[in-house]
Length: 217
Image (cartoon, rainbow, N blue to C red; front, side, top):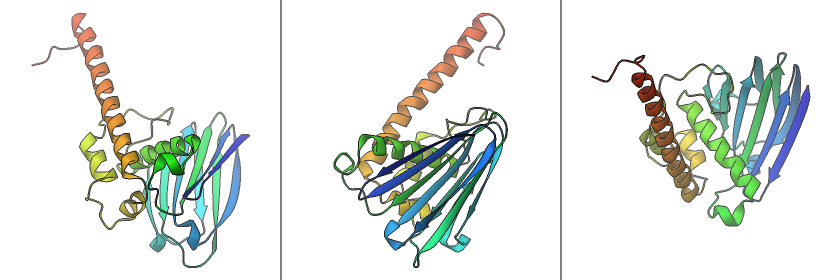
């Protein structure tokens, strides 16, 4: 198993990414305290087969969203120090990834408070986690089954900057992220969804031209 680790740190946010390719398993532990704030854990089976295990907190202090290939946990600030253990298991020709983010305080001005690598990692984490909360696999899942529906921009807007999740762990955590960054993510996703929709229309039109697809009614 080939293991790659990246740690990105700032006064407002720390992100740790552990990714492995090949069969085997890895385990790592880390201590959390009240000063680490909200913690977001995203576990992904990117290719092949695998499994994951997280220990060290009770469900009363967390919110979880699960898919076959992804699992997302949000931990509220802990009152006493504790140790979190993450285990990832991968079969032959598989790829798994664990991302742990500690939101130590609110990010008010992204460009002033986060480096380029940290901002990029945060954007990627927010998109993947948001999709997982809505039951949709991350774009990084290489061999996922086809998705029957994609999220609308309005669905993403309600999650990232709306009020539908007010009082939830997702809402509390997202409130720590610069609103300008959340809006920027939405703007980019809107453009991306338009491009995906246009690509689908091109495929359909070409299919219709050769008489394979039925014309629209």
